[in-house]
Structures are given as C-alpha cells and as structure tokens.
Length: 406
Image (spheres, rainbow, N blue to C red):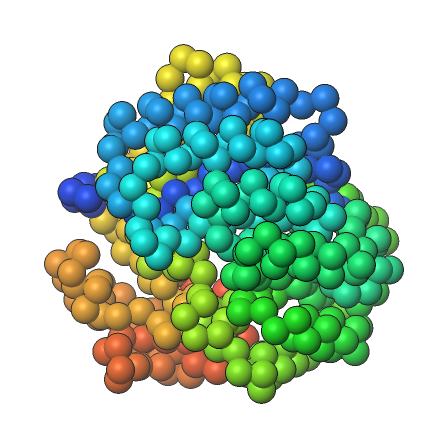
C-alpha cells in the first residue's frame, strides 16, 4: 500500500478530473493473525477472542455500500491481504468469498485473484474452499529457510510447513504461487540469504518477492533497536545481499520487474501493477486504503470500531480529493518502482501536460547523477542499475517537488 504521509488533503491547487470508469482492481483487508511478528506494523490483530464473523458481516456491508456508490464493471484483479487471511476457518472463508462474488459479480476471464497466506495456516480443506471461491493465486510469507531466523523474527512456521503448504496448494489446483523472502534480518548473513534463495529457486515458482527489513515504530524490533539489542547486518552486507539476490534471480531466468519483485514472463503481480501505475482500486476492510474517481480514502483501523462504523455507513477515517500536483508526484514515484519505468505518453494522457514540463529540475538532476536514464522503447524514464540501489533517494527528489510550491 501507498504511504499515508503522501495523502494530504490541504493542497491549494485544483483536484484532478474525476474518472469516468469504475476501478478494475479490489483490495480487501483481513486483519487477523495467529500472532504479531516482531517487525510488523501492519494493521493486524491477534486472532484470539476476535469477533471474526461480525467483522466479515461488516465487510459484506461495506462492499454493499461501496458498489452502490461506485458500481463495478468487470474486475481484473482481487487481492486479499492482512494480517493473515488464511487464519479464517473454512466456513468463514466460504462466507467471505461468497460476499466478494455477490458484490463484484463480473470477473474477467483471466482475472487474478490473490490471497496472502502464512505457511501452516492452509490445510487442504481450506485451500479447496479458496479455489472454489475463485482464488487462483496464493502468496506465502516464507521470509527465510532457516528455522532459527524464523524464530528470531516471530514467525510461527518452520521450513517443513513451507513445503507442506505449497504441496497442499498444488493438490487443491492452485499453481500460480509466490513466496516472500526477507533480507537484512537480525543475525542473517549473506551466505544464509544465498541458501534461502537456492531453496526458493528449487521450488520453481513463477514469482518471488524479496524485501529488506525495515525497522518500523510501534514494533518489538523498534524497541530492541532503540536499546541497541537488535543484531542487524551492517550496510555493506545488506547491499551485498541485494546485489546477490538480483544476480541469482536473473541467472535463474526471472525478470526483476519491480524493485523487490521477480517473475517469469507473464506472471508479474497484475494487482500490484495497479498501484505502481497509479490506477484506481477499491479498498475494503479495517485500515484499508482505496483510490476511486480521484479520491483517496483510509478506513477506520480497529476491528470493533470498524464493525460499528460499517453498520452506519462507509467506515471512513479519512477521505479527500487528490490534486493534480499530488497525482503527478504519485505517478512518478510509484511508477519508477517498476524497472521498465514510466511512459511520457501515459503522463500526457492522464494530465494533459508533458512530464518534462512539470518535473524538469528533478529529472535533469537524476539523469546527471546517473540514477535515471531515458528509455527508447517506452519513451520515458527508468531507474538505472545504480538507481535501483538508491531508489529512495530518487523518489525523494519528486515527492513535494510540485506540492511544496503551494
């Protein structure tokens, strides 16, 4: 999801023109987890004693109100994130997926329906319910193939759970799978990451996401970091880890299509491309973000507050129009995460002005620094090989470059 710090409603310039078409993508948030991982700052809550069915009924109500306000057309992608959506029991999962189908009934023939899962929370019965409900892609949060590292970050699964979960998914008929790995973990070495990549590649999956650890506020790791009790790899080792994973994935025939994502041709995450192209999407559930018709919203976060709010209307914490300047900055910042880069033509189509005219100074600065390069194929701009390593520095040049002028 996008960073909420970007979503300010107090801009002085005019909002972007509202779009005529309904979103083709749906994000749905299931906030329950078996436990809270030590690094996690997502909107998630330990499952024990939570009013799960009340939440699913509230979610059904939000879907109903949402499609009344903006009727959907054909849906191309659905992504169910969390939390851990697969902590739902089979009957709860069936109810939830029936709600989705009821309120978003038109699905593209090749629709991508992804659900996040943790190894060990997906038995064959549950995966069969997911498959019957339309789920055709599962993203497993594996993180590492060393049990000692998994325990050190608060994961409750082990490597045996990983293999068993992947095997069950295949038995259920779900072959489009992805796994997440992490690097920069406490006590992790370059060699350990290399071992994890080897074991991950041996699975022959179509997609891999590999993220670096970020120590976020309001997490156990942040508390430990402040007390100097978090044995993280140094910056040089972390850089070597990123270089290693890019090299290993390329050698294995996977395209790095986004800073943290690698896929076989045709298996890129189509849902996440919605975000990176700055396109509209429905956002449903506690704490979910949505982007519809030039407006962004953020839902109420807590489970019970969300349930109560949904009984009386759309459960919004914040909703505001996105100005043209904000939309332009978002277009560039999220678009440059994709390694093919941004297309000047799409910028003109969306905003009626050239990207060079709006961002001349930061574009020239980043080109001169060798962090961006022009693309002939797409007639636009992309991160250079060096720029991929310093993406945050590049993005920072564009954030606020227009909106801070107001």
